[in-house]
Amino acid sequence: MTMAVDVVIVGAGATGGLAAKNLTDQGLSVVVLENGKRFQPPVDLTNSEANSKKIQWNEPRVYTGKHSVVPKAGIGVGGGTLTYLGVMPRFHKNDFKTYSTEGVGEDWPISYEDLAPYYDKVEKEFGVAGDCGPVPPEPYELPMPAHRMSWHAQVLAEGARKSGTRPFAPPIAINSMEYDGRPACIYCGWCGSGCPTDAKATSQNTYLAKAEKKGARVISEAFVHRVQYDPVQAKATGVLYKDADGNEHEIQARIVILAAHAIETPRLLLLSSCPSFPEGLANSSGTVGKYLLSHPTWMVFGTFDELVNAYKGIQMGQVMVQDFYQPNRHNDYARGYILLSYMMTPITYANLSGDFIGADYKEFLYDYPYTAAWWAHAEGLPNENNTVTLDPDVKDHRGLPVARLTTEWLENDIKLAAAARDKAAELMEASGARKIRIGLNYGAHAMGTCRMGDESASSVVNEYGQTHDINNLFICDTSVFVTGTGLNPTLTAMAIASRAADFIGEAVSKGEL
Image (tube, rainbow, N blue to C red; front, side, top):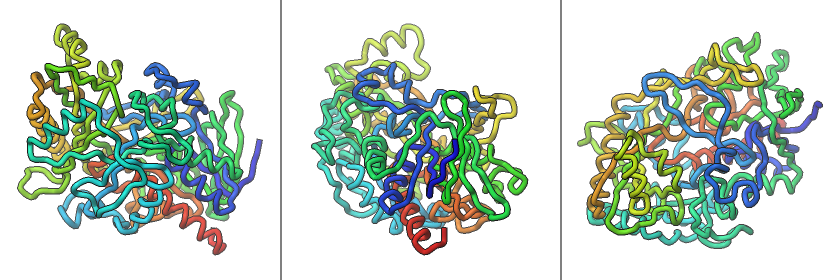
């Protein structure tokens, strides 16, 4: 089957759905291709952690390097928004200028001011509840009030205040009231399992639903394995994909947008090598797949004498501490970190235990209803040696090379994460925990493998996600990040995608695309 449209978008997650809705509103014909299935959360994902496996990336990958970071990813119509926990802070102004301000990382080609109107727009369109906090990039208001804190969050917040910090209810894309036709949260705790009530904003129940009503088409179980390139026109001409039965199809398009996240997007470009781009499509710089970013994190558990029932409520971020996010020249590390409350359904709790074994593990499980947790979340600095490449040996069921992730934390990453862990333990003690346990240390979120920049020799895309090498090929996901910051990335990725979609629409209207 061959189909011709104005725009084909690879990936139906936060940014792909947003771009589809924005461009459909501008009168363009749009097809969105998604590798995963289409689920109806109230039916397919009801109250079961086992069901959550359906919406987590389950195809093979190879993890190597000193620290072998394994960032989670979603799959299905809705992408990562099916599994994410909805924490939506804005980046701070100095996050975009880390080299200028601290001499580490690199500066972005955009500023906070460039994204500010798009932050506003996405927060209203998507639906975000909460407060901007005591140290925001600028004072701003969200469209919904903050959620009420459950008991475990109140306990953590009180300890944080005793320690001299300023805890607050951060921005979360979960309804605290009925909003945009979706209900208020019922605090069942299944945020990471797809949200059976639709109170959590996902790409599926917001942007994609509206785009489809305007005529966009979303094709699920469609694995895109190649971006087609015409060397005569020096343009991308569309994509090839395989359906669930292995049949191949082609979508021809004036504009190709990749929104498959920071692992599958570079993998697709590398799979799309051709005589004009033998090292991967749009990779004249050699940076496709390089500078893989992630957040070094620790789980810190506190067990109390009283029941805290941390399984009740929103899964992450009922309370946040951002007092240690701003750089401090007196520290022996650069950048900063945040602390987020974390409530856990039983299997998640067991999986985040880290190295506990035997009697210690049994005691840990027994303490479940008495235990609360801080998620200590730090920034990992850019490292050229952290990469996504094509594995030379391992193939997927289609016979294609899988993504190979090579990762190693830098010394600053390790020091910063340790400081975050120790501060979380200090705040937990101030909350009255009788026992503090250090749980899993892992890398959260994948970013940075097709970074943006002004120079085509050292970056893949410009400030609008337009590839330097091919002017009708765009990337609109976290792979364009220059640094990871210490904050959750979804809102900023969406703001960048919204800005890019406006740029694309304007270029089309001028006849430039």
